[in-house]
Length: 333
View 1 (cartoon, one colour):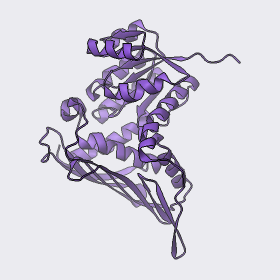
View 2 (cartoon, one colour):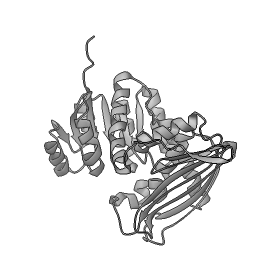
View 3 (tube, helix red, strand yellow):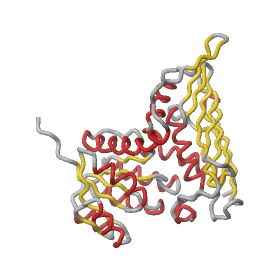
């Protein structure tokens, strides 16, 4: 059997996430080669291309797509650019891996998905928490009914005050589409819905504030989401929590047991006793987080090579943004 040739990949956006996660992991993947990179800052484009030995660089993504034969494109630019870049790449015949947030709103997201479906191209949204080993294990437990019927979900991601690791555009609503809810909340909603099989939303009520950091977007948000089958979902996120360390958790309570992430814990009810069923040996949280980026990239390249639907697809990304949009609307934005 003749081995498949390597997929030719292009990178759009040479910022932090590309340099820390995507390019290093792509460089070690056997089934792909990075053949081109583009960034609106030509100095950064040239520097990153030289550092990672990428043959070609451009300061216009459209020029890269016109002049380079590509099988897939990684889009890691500000959210405002995702719609035009995704459409151009998809219509150029490339499969697309696009970073979160996927789009600023549901309308933009649907346009991207419709373009991918019309062009018959693969579209994957970068939701790396789905690709953590502990998340994947918990999803299997829930699917197999280990917790019984899911009753409640409680989720939170509270970054401690004083630690700011976001680029400038995250604080501009026109560029990002929102603040902490769009950034952290979107990821937690996606993970929870992914694990329970995307139970449909019935209603969503939220509130948010920018009183701590004084930004144009919210730095803190809370939400209550009612899902079908009487599942209650509570969410809290913040870029400025008054604490000494970051807090991140997702807790699922079922009729037969409960489970939590970060770290993974599982208990089950057996008659009048509660039994610890936590699986051993999943590694520490930092390792799981770092490995998730490598795993999602390997998954995407495998989908490109085999022409299969990715685990994190556009239609589910639209469903998550529908929840986000409902929460913003309920808060009066």
